[in-house]
Amino acid sequence: MLFSQPEQQLSEEEFRLIRDLIYNHCGLFFDSDNKYLLDRRLLPRLALHSLSGFRDYYQFLKYDRKKDEEISDILDILTTNETYFFRESFQLDAFTDEILPELKSLKQKDRTLRIWSAGCSTGEEPYTIAMLMLEKNCFPGWRIEIVGSDISHRVVQVARKGIYGKSSFRSTDQRYLERFFTEAPGGYRICDEVRELVTISQMNLFDANRLALLGKMDVIFCRNVIIYFDQGSKKKVIESFYNTLRPAGYLLLGHSESLMNVSTAFALRHLKSDMVYQKSAVPTGGVAK
Ligand SMILES: C[S@@+](CC[C@H](N)C(=O)[O-])C[C@H]1O[C@@H](n2cnc3c(N)ncnc32)[C@H](O)[C@@H]1O
Image (cartoon, rainbow, N blue to C red; front, side, top):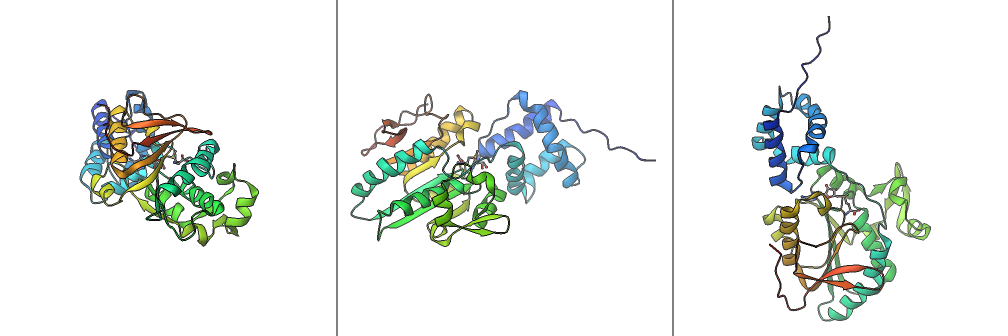
């Protein structure tokens, strides 16, 4: 006779404990409407780690040696890593046609450019930035560094591998595919010329120690990431971005994201193709409380 496993149910208290633990770790907030989602999606983790209930799972998330890895894995289950090459093309036009020329004249002396794609998922965003810069070919002899980072170990591995299937190319012009990719098992491999400009790291945007090692940036892309954060988390992350940017540096958010009620420290610049945020050349403001 087969005995079915007793159904585990996430109690109100367990929900709050796990929800707050995730929130404190990485800023993602699940309100009580998401209790069922957490319950269903986290249930298979109990069996995976041979745990008898959600209370034990909470202890696992709090104290186990592999707790950071587990939180990164469950974020993959609970959130979306949706991304593709050349996403939000208006903003990319503003970047190539207006921001880059401005930075080029501003940084003639030290001839370095550092760009961060924060929450880059499987890497399409930082590689897009690299392709655009290579195509523009207007920084000969400059030191260009593009950093792509994400909290999820899984997507970071995909980004490092650099092989992409059809859905990543839904808005890629054929000429980019021909110039920067070669066919490979499972899709198309990004070429070394692009990879050499990009460093991919696993990084939690709320890990202040890790962020401190990053160094100053000229442009930060953080698109379709803070949409999942509550107001308090947004403020924390935007303040870190402010401190990481050089004076006159740019912050590019996703189209449905804004700094309204989050920060007054940046100026909203109306460029020809899009609106972007810029840190003052002489820093003055602060992050809105
Ligand atoms: C929807 S994807 C956006 C990818 C890309 N920026 C784009 O716009 O196409 C959001 C990414 O943010 C990452 N993320 C969420 N919270 C994070 C955190 N606290 N630290 C770093 N990355 C985080 C997720 O793992 C996910 O890969």
